[in-house]
Length: 79
Image 1 (cartoon, rainbow, N blue to C red):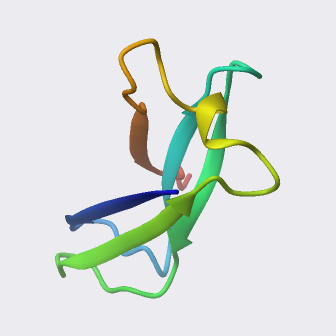
Image 2: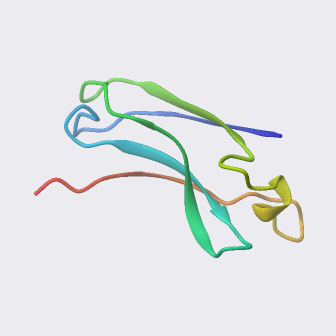
């Protein structure tokens, strides 16, 4: 099991546009949602916390040859 944690904020409120924490599944070559936040206000620190594996995957699906897990945090675009 791996615990993923991110702390930050956005100038665009997550309540208006969801923020996601994702990990890269190297077996499937795709990003997997670990957790998200759609409740916070703009310019307010918040945490995204999650664990791997998720959704029936194996932890080894996410690790590279050095044992690193690639993660990203992104926010949906609002138009």
